[in-house]
Image 1 (cartoon, helix red, strand yellow):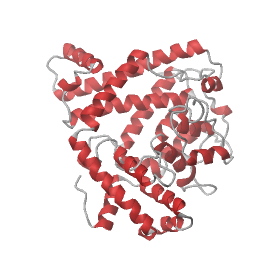
Image 2 (tube, rainbow, N blue to C red):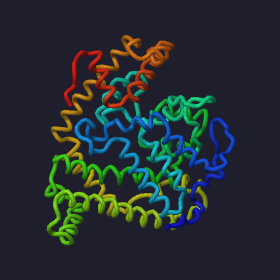
Image 3 (cartoon, rainbow, N blue to C red):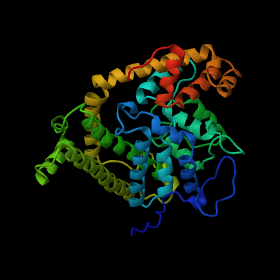
Image 4 (tube, one colour):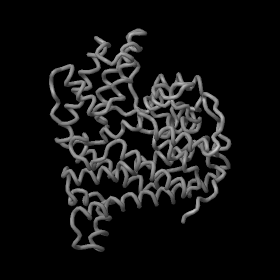
Length: 392
């Protein structure tokens, strides 16, 4: 049985957490980061991920990945990376499990449609929406709204892809993140913890490997097509040499598991080398380093970009996927103005919230409502209000 190694000095220490916005007594049986993970797992938003699209609308088939299965896979890979780097596995998993809580129904198509609808009302960003979910929209506890997660988990959720302010920032900061940061500062100019960086790398590994798997099983492209990418072509040649008569289904699985393994092993080796060079002595040293210390080697980063490019061309822009996404956008693009014109079309508690403020406040409530929908519920609402059905 594997034994967890002691935490590295640069790991986040749950016994020295910066705490929660609403102070709570410590648990007798769980660390602060274990509590965060458990609260996320038991949240309503987490359960909804079972019926939200990853790439394929779940109605297309039972075996394609949803946001929930993707999230679980990210959590597993994040734990593997954290263990190898002597980080806190529970924190890495908590960030991984929360990272997609703000996604809309219908994946990128739904997010694009809702972003367009919110263009005049402060915009829409799924990362900021995840923060809204865990700090505001989950209404479960007697003393507060949200999940009251620890500072370290919230920081990782917001900044797992890098700083949001300062010279290293890559995009504008969503107004809600600024609003929450004023209340509970998350050091937006710094990088996140190594645990959150591990969760971000795990996300890249999971969706690349499993989109290859789903795309092949859906027949959007063939093994001969993906063999044209240097990285995956080499792995397929390896499988063929070992198992020359293997049936297609098993070839796909052997390819997928090798993609994950090679990415994980490379990230571990590269991250150990970066950390050894930087010699951080604390988690704060990781944040202040000025560059991510968990990531791929240059060669593997190039391979990862090539895989993404292939998937973009052969999967995300495939005629079948684009047709589904177009119809999904149609549903979201109809619902938003319908609710803006008449909030009473929503359930009473949402309608009452929408009618409390001005137009921007109303739009934000409606965006919260739509973003929380599952694919199935959104299609049902579209059918109920428009009298038309989307044929996905």
